[in-house]
Image 1 (cartoon, rainbow, N blue to C red):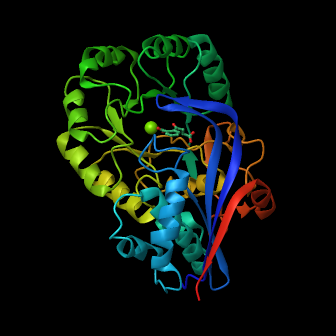
Image 2: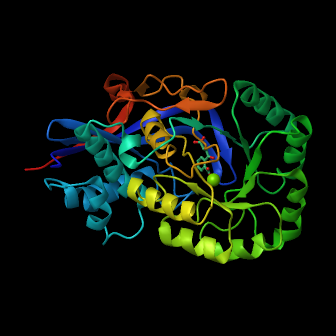
Image 3: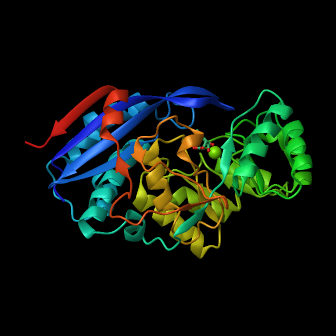
Length: 370
Ligand code: OSB
Ligand code: MG
């Protein structure tokens, strides 16, 4: 696969409703798309960085700079046998996993098209229907949260995750558990607590949660291992796992019993697959996380979720929960059983709506091999 050209586009996409986490509120989601041309084929991917360095150290503008100055020059005009060769080419770049994933995952789309296979099959996926959950942002009151939960439970979603932070936690969890005794319920703190909160975090044990996601510092696996020894609720790591080695460290230290795999956060499909294979061998369940993606990122997440070991419902849900109009066709829809049926055509399996993308584009740059 020769990399003939790469086009970066920044889109401004308005979320249907603001999404609040312990680190801030997103109203408009800047979306960074990568379009990679290779010998007549076009691969698409999404760089999942946020508007600022709040989830990890990346942001859409930082990723753009790293792509332009460092990553794109390393692949432009090069011939690659496999998309899985990209991590080696980028091995001198530290961090910036989301930017790296932008190139790597676009090449996987190209490789799948060249092979005449749906991307999920090329990755080794086996599940043709994936279980789905939703992530609900922080709400103004437990009553407001209950309204949102009722809608998603009625839609069939198999797991409800609610965001928490100090002052907006137990009352919300207890209200949801009281109204829905048997749903699969989890919480995500996005690093809002410290080890001084162990007693408080132990009181979540009463609500038989499926998991508690990333309660402590984003970069501290050891602290999570100390917490896990003192509470019953199974911990799940998100922010702390940018690559396989941290997954191994976390499992060996007993810092979590579940891992959330995000394609961008781990640097692409090859790294995500390494973590999936390791967790499967260690019998650690995994699920696919979300970053409020447009349809392009969502399509990649669907492909990821088909691999063995993705036994828990992911944060991969219907396009219509986020966007008035998504950038792919058909939009992602969820069955009344709370599943997504995977596409069967080669590559990503969805048509990318270049017309809509152009209309939403606020910045664009094309890099061509000479
Ligand atoms: O921690 O999983 C997270 C959104 C932005 C940043 C971090 C997270 C999230 C979500 C939303 O929980 C998942 C989604 O619906 O895409
Ligand atoms: Mg999370």
